[in-house]
Amino acid sequence: MSIAFWEVTKNFGPKRILDNVSFDVATGEILFILGKSGMGKSVTLKHIVGVLKPDSGAIIVDGMNVTKLDEDGLAEIRRRCGMVFQHPALLDSLTVYQNVSFGLRTPQFARTLRRTLSEEEIRARAIEKLALVHLGPELLERRPQELSYGMQKRVSLARTLAPEPRYLLFDEPTTGLDPVTTNAVNDLILELSRKLKVTSIVVSHDMACALKVADRILVLDQARILAWGTVPEIKRSQEPLIRDFLSETLALLPPEER
Image (cartoon, rainbow, N blue to C red; front, side, top):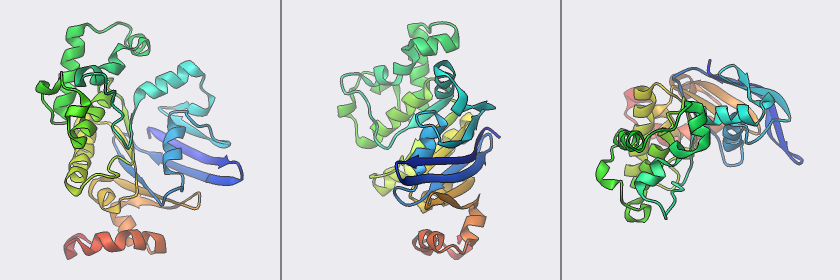
């Protein structure tokens, strides 16, 4: 077990977002968190890195109770967790190289590493991470606005990978993308998780993506876990909401894959 939620409850004013939620994520696992908008999916990710604190319960990462950590402890948790947001959020004034290497130049990263990387090491790492997302060194001096949106997403992912996190947290990574780019991003999530042996949590509303990539799927509804299991287990669920999620997706699959 690498990440665990223990009886986590979170309210925003009178609205309950998470209600006594408990689950765990195994080392190296790809967990998809699905649900309708406003059901607490992104809130769950923010609890992992301590951006939000629960009203009750605990979040455990690598044996550390995130809810009890001071700022130094939270900084260590955040170094271990790489966040991948819905939009690339690249700095337009910086080159691809400067964007990808941004996190490698911070005092926090130097303290964690107990040394400062040389410029040669930073450049080598930037090229290595771009290669992992299938981009070449010829892009290093380009600006984000010179790239397609799909390429910007890949650069953003390379930036997240640069500090070599143990966990990849994806917040709606395919929202607004065309089908080709969506498939490419999903393939990257699977490829990187397996190749780098990292644990990945993907917040999504896309059941087709989850069925293709996930080891397990967790469905949130009305602040609670509606279902949590492997892909075959989720396919067998008789919950009406899950059947709705599945109906259109499964109709497109050949019978042997349904």
